[in-house]
Length: 243
Image 1 (cartoon, rainbow, N blue to C red):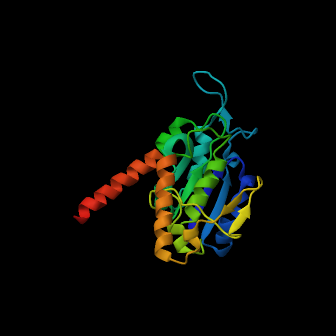
Image 2: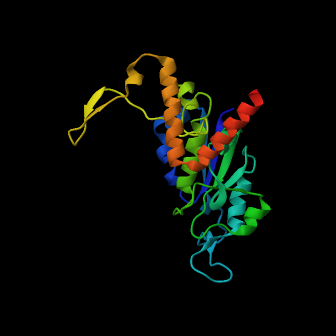
Image 3: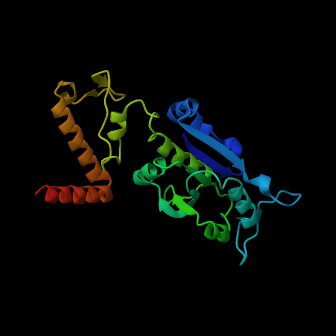
């Protein structure tokens, strides 16, 4: 069965958006994955189709009503996989989580708006909260697209080269090494000649592999000390196991 992404949103017209183009779009056309959107506003119970109300305790903004959101979730309760609420309070989306979700049958993504969703429906449904990062968006839709994209590219048949997938950033706990293509010598806008590293044109595959690993390690150590510490810890543990 195809991996299924079900999106609960107040703006279904935002989808597929970028997910309909390039790699995820081609995978969608091939049936590698399925996309379903459901308009939360369709579950509003009054003539004004209200989906939100003022927060108890006062404060700015509006909160999405638990009865409306719960009805939308119930309508897709037979869909496979966990229900995820895109929220800055949630677990950080990383490659490990993307692999975990891509390895399942699919996900149902709840996109919040305004000040967010009434906590009671989150608690009653045991909804998993996932964050794209330490910043705030206008709504959960862009985060949902990013999560879906991260999962889709891991699905069998989505990418043309499994080797390319295995060498991407985070797959080995490292950031990716630099890439180069033709022309071999290029004059930049400042008149400086920039040449492709000689090892990459040597035809020596083992030297290329070692160079790429060394560059990935250097860049990770410089830019992401947190990833580098974890990588070193794993490498030291593996070394001890070999002994």
